[in-house]
Length: 206
Ligand SMILES: Cc1cc2nc3c(=O)[nH]c(=O)nc-3n(C[C@H](O)[C@H](O)[C@H](O)COP(=O)(O)O)c2cc1C
View: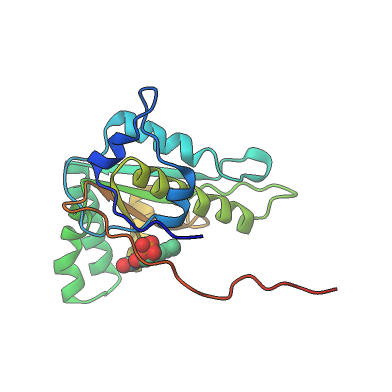
């Protein structure tokens, strides 16, 4: 099948408006979603964020534990998050450059979502399954952002592993920070990356 490689702008997404909601063909989303590291205001609207939430609650989730949570940082709250990163860089000896850079990091997008697990002890759902659900939820948010004409990128780095950051965000030690979703308006159309070519499907013969 020919891969459609044209770029989506917010205006083009609007062309797919259908019954008052934004519509993008599911196959186009699945074959073309790309990350966008360059992001600016405006942030997603509350209505758009509601749809992201709905998508995150649609993912495979064994026993419906909803073992994840998104902590949203917009406006001044991102400054606070930057202060937390700086404290982590200082306390965890990440180096002078990291200390200087830390406060700027959350300002790279108008909305930063910290994706965290909320593991629950369950006889048939080990934590690694719950981690998998949380990762799916993060990706669902990225996908929804793409359909809405926003850009998004999933980042991790030392602050996703930092106990200082976990403490500040009130994430218990046993839980994980899966990453930071940076979401906003792309200053240019999101560049759609070419499809990868890798042999990931291996037919097993009897
Ligand atoms: C768990 C996870 C952590 C990631 N951490 C980073 C990161 O810290 N910095 C970064 O530039 N990209 C990171 N990425 C990769 C980007 O989110 C993105 O997937 C990558 O740049 C490829 O772009 P694409 O999504 O358009 O294929 C991470 C991806 C995942 C799934």
